[in-house]
Image (cartoon, rainbow, N blue to C red; front, side):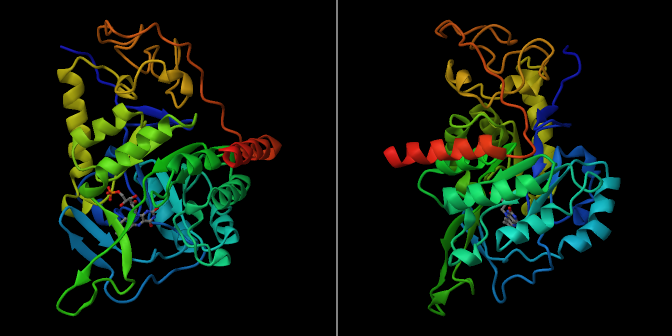
Amino acid sequence: MMGELDLSVEIAGIRFPNPVWVASGCFNYGREFAHLYPLRELGAICTKGTAPEPWVGNPGVRMAETPAGMLNAIGLMNPGVDHYLRVDGPWLRAQGVKIVVNIVGRTVEEYVRVAERLTPEVADAVELNISCPNVKEGGLAFGTSPRATYGVTAAVRRATSLPLFVKLSPNVTDITELARAAEAAGADGLTLINTLLGMAIDIRRRRPVLDNVFGGLSGPAIKPIALRMVWQVVGAVRIPVVGIGGIATAQDALEFLMAGARAVQVGTACFANPRAPLEIIAGIRQFMAENGIRRVTELIGAARPAGEAALGNLPPLGAGGADGGHGPFPGYGPGGDLPARSDSPAPTPLRRPEARHPDPGPRAGEALRQWLKDADRA
Ligand SMILES: Cc1cc2nc3c(=O)[nH]c(=O)nc-3n(C[C@H](O)[C@H](O)[C@H](O)COP(=O)(O)O)c2cc1C
């Protein structure tokens, strides 16, 4: 018989009750789900992308089903930050759930205008959706350019002292470049992935199904890609990573945690089964009980090779650390509850992730310059 299981995780200075959040755009601001279960049972809610003014979104057909997921081209329809501050923010706060406000903009200034309005009364953290088209750069998404990613992250970093997550786009060649740019600009954590660009054609009408032609693919089809990207990013940065993409079961969530994500977000699965996040939490709990794991943090990064620990992206470490003195890689060295793997080399000394810095300041600028130099050389 095991004592109490601890599912809580600490990320960017916030303690979340469990590592299962709901993803932006798939849970609106929570009201539609609140009659089903208390929202405080979730690890956190990521709100619908919120803009400085109300956005009406795209016209016409905006969703299409695919064999293992869906395409959407909603166009980030949302009621705007004023409405959030007056109506949904205070209501969400009263639900006792951790709130991550997802913010959107068409220019850097628009993102800043939302971020600077958010206070701890209505937000525990900000999640920057950088998959939006940058109207000043010909509509290219911020998140496809390291320079634009750095620019918007640094500007929002200066505009808020709330913990800042940057949500990465998968529609890039090397996601680790974007991850490093966001880290250099002062992000406290990264969430990934957003949707993958796709399309569908109606063969009878001989036209694209979506009026926008292209849409974002989400759901089970994207899980292996998301998992691969999370694995890569965890190995490339020192800040925490939250995994998103096709997560529908506890098995899916555990894979992301073992890849090194400190939490996961459930998106499309909520449409088919609004209870999916709770079932995932229950499944993680069951897995822990069956495998003699007391703290969920013991699973984070468990699938990664020993020695990788030195690369960063670690849960807080050591005695007195948030994981209660258990190493982040149980079975790969001393400290875990599982028997040590006989083939594991001596554990590499671990470094703590750097503290949050509210202003990216010259240090971040220097990091970007160095990073650009390295990128030019490569
Ligand atoms: C209908 C819909 C709306 C979405 N709206 C947003 C949004 O406003 N902001 C955002 O950052 N991501 C948005 N996303 C992306 C999801 O949060 C998530 O990153 C993506 O769907 C992959 O996860 P999943 O496969 O679990 O759905 C949206 C996704 C869907 C399906």
